[in-house]
Amino acid sequence: MSKYNEKPKRNKPKILTKYDQFVVPRLRDIPVWVREGATDEEIAKRLNIHIWTLGDYRRKHPKFAEALERPTKWETHVYPRFLKLLLIKEAADEYNSVPR
Image (cartoon, rainbow, N blue to C red; front, top):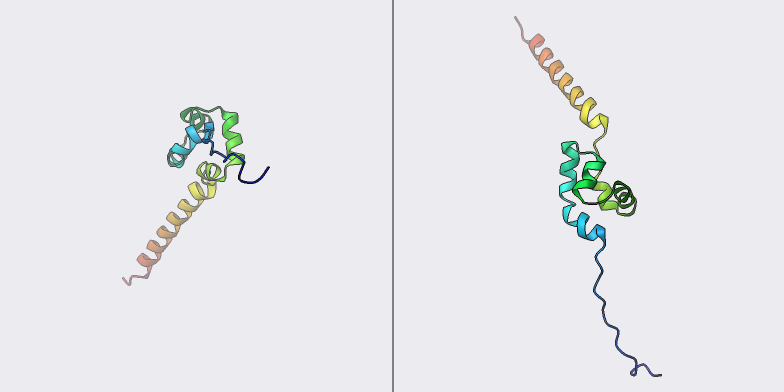
């Protein structure tokens, strides 16, 4: 059979997965939910997927895993307090350096 006798291949329509249907359109919302303090279970409910599916997607899709990243304790508790103490120390140093 020659090359010209073969039928042309048709492009099949892409079958949307649950990830494409439910998660991809909401990828911008997920970091907001994480900042609001939503748990993985709550996020899974909002995305209409099971919690186990959320874990699978986290492992398979790097963009989804990045959207679900939570700030560390250092970023939420330690560093802001550290900055506050530094500001207080600087203010005290300025106050003490003013001649009386």
